Amino acid sequence: MADVSDPEIVTAYNQVRNDKSEINWLLIDYENARSDKLTLTATGSGGLNELKDHLRDDHASFAYVRVSYSNDKESLREKFVLVVWIGEQVKVMRKAKLSVHTADVKSVLRIFSIEVAAKDKEDLEEEPIIVRLRKAGGASYDGV
Image (cartoon, rainbow, N blue to C red; front, side, top):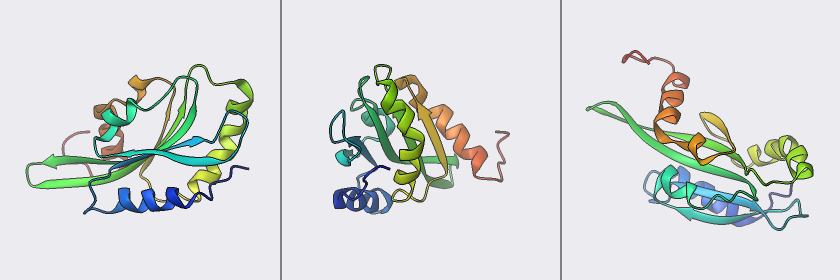
């Protein structure tokens, strides 16, 4: 079981969820290589592109991102994405615990439209994620 009791995680989650806040992503990492305690390590306002700069190949991390997109010039939608990052150099035992820990993280980062499992920064390109968000959103009038 992962320890997600860090109050800063909930504070950052609420900032990302707040439409009036510039903060649109948060990153949670393990306290250290042997710990199951998760702590808030970064927040930002630069979306997926800025988040990617903070992901490390030797870390397993969780991120929560507000993604804005429009279906046409009249509408703007904001949806939330849970990212489960598993860097290429993450140890086997850490990888083995991630599915259980993901459930613990979801108890705090509760509301999201899609979950993205990423092992490479290319997995977090914005356009394919927006396509998935459109599909998850139900009615799509632009052929997606």
